[in-house]
Image 1 (cartoon, each protein chain N blue to C red):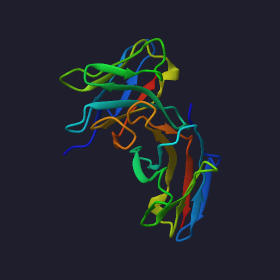
Image 2 (image 1 turned 135 degrees about the vertical axis):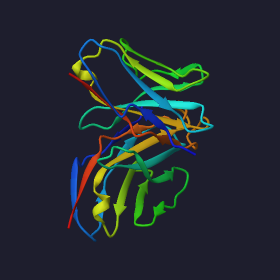
Image 3 (image 1 turned 90 degrees about the vertical axis):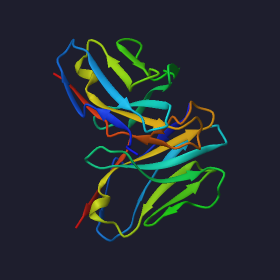
Amino acid sequence: AQTVTQSQPEMSVQEAETVTLSCTYDTSESDYYLFWYKQPPSRQMILVIRQEAYKQQNATENRFSVNFQKAAKSFSLKISDSQLGDAAMYFCAYRSEETSGSRLTFGEGTQLTVNP
Amino acid sequence: NAGVMQNPRHLVRRRGQEARLRCSPMKGHSHVYWYRQLPEEGLKFMVYLQKENIIDESGMPKERFSAEFPKEGPSILRIQQVVRGDSAAYFCASSQSWGARIEAFFGQGTRLTVV
């Protein structure tokens, strides 16, 4: 079974600074996707960024980028120029072709605080 | 095109009552997933349904929980004889078809409180 581990229950960053959230996963599959979701206090799950395992290039979405290390099974999220609106719970998630449909396996989350 | 709609947003039930959570997928989506988020935890997969079929219920508790997705109408997650431990946020996601490349979209969740 696949597992996703987020070892940082809480992180904090100063506004305008950069922060990196860690995620590792365990799988024996070769074709899969990795995701970072943001969950603000409203509880809405918002997709931040996705990475396809067969792509070597790290995904980037504006101020959000990932460092995908396939051999190490590591998938960290970097947030540059942090803004107050980035404060939220962040979940790393995994999905593969070999599991049911578009089912996701989530990590336990990292609570990000942005200090003004 | 409305997103995934879940209702109610908040539901309070006394121990022993039944809870019914509804999920209307996005238009054109025929695949529905239910997840449970216990306090201070990540989302855990419960069940995957297509219209009129349960595809994967490996995450569902063996007793008291059931799910359906009828040909017409929303998907329903039903919890019978609720207990305090059922208090959680329940999320529904929907997708257009099957596969890892297919994006699933989340609703805003239903927060169930059992008193």
